[in-house]
Image 1 (cartoon, rainbow, N blue to C red):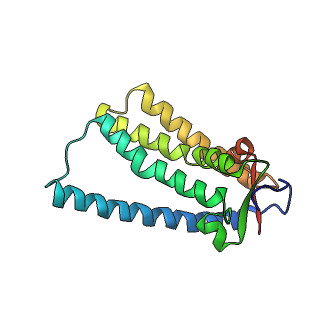
Image 2: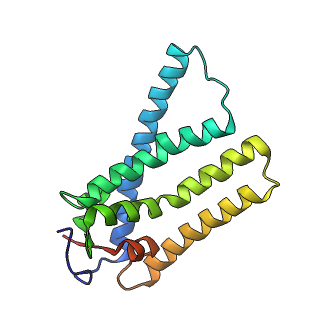
Length: 174
């Protein structure tokens, strides 16, 4: 199912939003489990939450939230069923022009990039204040990408967004 013609049975935005809701719940569950595990480590093993530098906070954020989610979704959408948990629930699959694993990594890296940029902006602002250019640039890029994904999904007949174009992918009915 991964390597197929990109133009087969496009899916409307409503069903993709329903799949997105299931994926959002999956991510929330992951974040809740991560929170519980980290609190146990911090409180039981370390005796409290340590003070972290900005770099440490940025790295923890990237390596415990964004990167694992990109990897999990890339594995789900790049092989086997070619579908995330939400897409499976809605009988959707991701098709690729070529190289599903590579396409899935690109697609999900770009799809979750706004989240990473939002983290970078927020963490920088917490440590250094929000009155410099860096958090503003990250915030504007984050929101611009997220809005462009949503607008493209809503207004294109095939519901493809920027990440789909760059990765050579399309979400279709199973």
